[in-house]
Image (cartoon, rainbow, N blue to C red; front, side):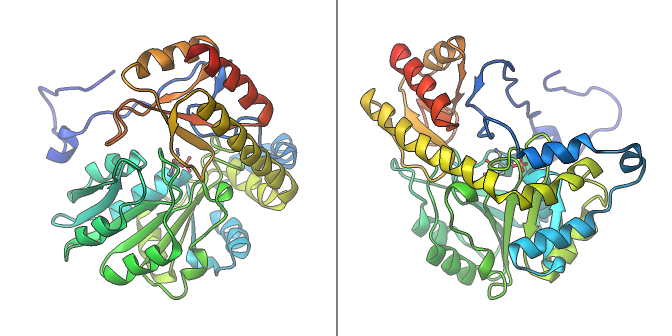
Length: 355
Ligand code: PMP
């Protein structure tokens, strides 16, 4: 494993040769996993019921995405032509970049942000232009507007953002889309349920806006790999040319309607996380650590030069947290996923001992 310097045989494109393999950290499975921003409990029982009834016939046939796309469209109050289901938002990002980013184009990114934007953009021939947030990690709105050029082709905005948990206002999204009518504005709402504000209702008035959602976070289905892209029917048409027709598998498709219908479960889980976030933020404050205000299911805290040791000690006490020190502007920072109140009370106890 690791990076290969090929000495013989066909060579990939120069951009691919310059890339590094991306290996997500492998968490030990029996610890409290607060390092991937997953749902920390389980998906809806209604989804598990569907899973228990998957038949051999369901598996022998190729998946049919379009029926479920229509149901997701109804849920989002857009037309089926405006929706594309993907193998997680990661595939959505990949497909969007492959569709729109050409040589000479620029991808504009406020940083720090979700790491995979840079990874997928590195596999295109576009230039990556980053705009650094200040020390408060608030969305660098003015700098981003200044960063828009005639070559800007895609602007990727995670809202709420990771790892900071900061948000972008509706007015800011509208202004960005108006200032860059020649670019696709991707608003990645992976953490929407913990925030509650969406740009989906803007899709009909802003033709260059594309919104992404995921079933990996609040719904608790990260392992199934289902994401959603919603935008104008025209933008979706281009991306349908690029995406594999079977990238969302039959098991995942069977589960989505049940996940969407079980609003009681979703509301319960989100309510639990929001209550736990408030409590855990107080625990971070009580420990004397600096933290950033978050609208997502995680909190970023400043540990300082001992960050590696801190993560190691939390992990050995059974609580996995994520070192974000390598993110631009996040030196010494650690990100903690928020689970249920019971889990976070345990995490707070461990934090008190470790700090
Ligand atoms: N967008 C953001 C901002 C994320 O943090 C993540 C996952 N950590 C994703 C997208 C990926 O979501 P998915 O599991 O649907 O690929």
